[in-house]
Image (cartoon, rainbow, N blue to C red; front, side):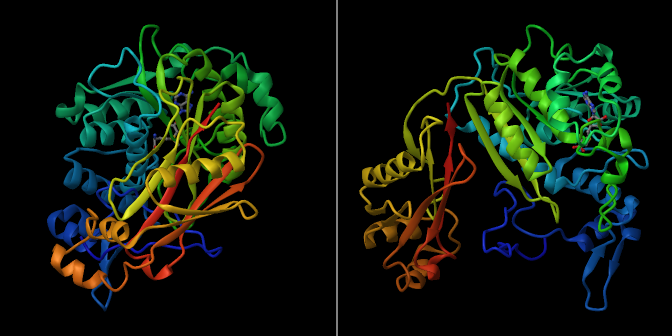
Length: 459
Ligand SMILES: C[S@@+](CC[C@H](N)C(=O)[O-])C[C@H]1O[C@@H](n2cnc3c(N)ncnc32)[C@H](O)[C@@H]1O
């Protein structure tokens, strides 16, 4: 629907995160006019400019909700509704988190948990009235879910949204985390970390805090993953207010004492008791400063693997944090090239305490093993990798993503395939965190070739 999406760059020149390539909204912008044509109830919310451009007023909650409703129905076959004021999810944004989990599950880094059946099973902490992650995960990928929440309205409407979809109903169970409320044991740790920001007395709040995993997950249960879009904010004023959109969201949905740092810290603390019951623990995180703190907390808690990503989320940055306690399956360096014009590789099994130098040497060794020529500069911590003309031609011309016939593409590309080389640079950010960047040396090729690297921290 509509025109293609362009890759965006930030002011500092780094590439902004892009929509997940498997996201069904990755290829083209939403075509509001076409949706309005198909769904009369959506028509009043679409205005058309003099130039014929259809748009939706995202500051209008009713418009945002109707768009979500028609997208879920049209693209996912899901019947859905929420009452006024409840948090209204943006379907393309929420889909990115689902696909990231799909990537985590399909990676070989850690083995499946022994009790996993054929069907992927997830736990959505704070599923909300909208129940969006279970509905998307079940309809897109056939996953089964337990979705938990604590408010009456969320529990009632999440159940309604499941029941309105008999084809998915068997896959989704909604649980009340309030039913197992008890004082939270590790409050001292949370209080210490966030005390400056807490807006109400932490001890009172602790006495009322419902459980997150403890007591909600049953004893013999196991899950492939948990996910969470936590209440990000410490006060409703802070939640307030993106004037550019109206996605609703009540105080119960958006706010908790200590904000997301406290909430995700509690998930991390709970995860220690459930280390053998979940393959991956994950959460969304709204602030980069919190992401760094939470990475450290996951490591301190003994996670064997910690992984992060950045999500495309409109104007707002959001991150994904994943951790696992399961021992990594293999200690190897391996490549993964889903499309030949996207040259990506993954460094696995490097010990966490390995510094930039060892990572640089592993990178070099990986490319040498693939018969590529490498020049390492230990002063700038970079390795320049050059493909022979034959390797370059094979890389580009057989790219799965390349549009057009092989003959056409061959003619077009002969002039540009010579001399592909790219530079991998290893940066030490905060101690214990390495950033590995791949960039093309010949910028003229950037339309045809992408280089990326994931570095898996393993302790
Ligand atoms: C930001 S909303 C997310 C809703 C939905 N998952 C989404 O992405 O739109 C956070 C949800 O967490 C719920 N919540 C708060 N504390 C919880 C707890 N201890 N266990 C489960 N859910 C909780 C809130 O009621 C709210 O519905």
